[in-house]
Image 1: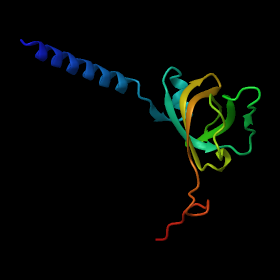
Image 2: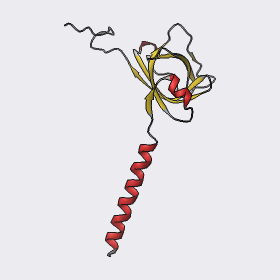
Image 3: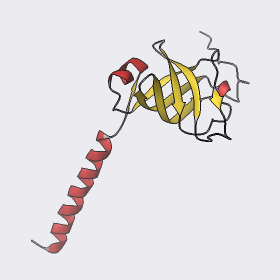
Image 4: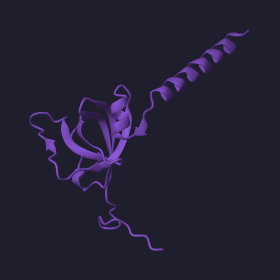
Length: 130
């Protein structure tokens, strides 16, 4: 066998290994109940901000700590500790996706995605006519 064939086979093996490793580390969508059952796995949890409860962000004390309460799509409320700064227009978001792990009585989020009202409908929910 030529050296080029051996190198090619090794590159293919390394590529397959990298793909398998990235697929095994990918997180899935869940609710707070499922995330609580498996605290060692990372999940995406979809929900809405509970605007009746306090949000806490003090950039002077810790600029990378933001806490708030979220209700998932199953109706379960949980305290969320985001290890990043407070996103801009956070209170205006229609829907929130948090990415992280459930530890104890709080969800420890490493990242957040927000669905904000569209600038094309002036922040009002779109209406569909039948």
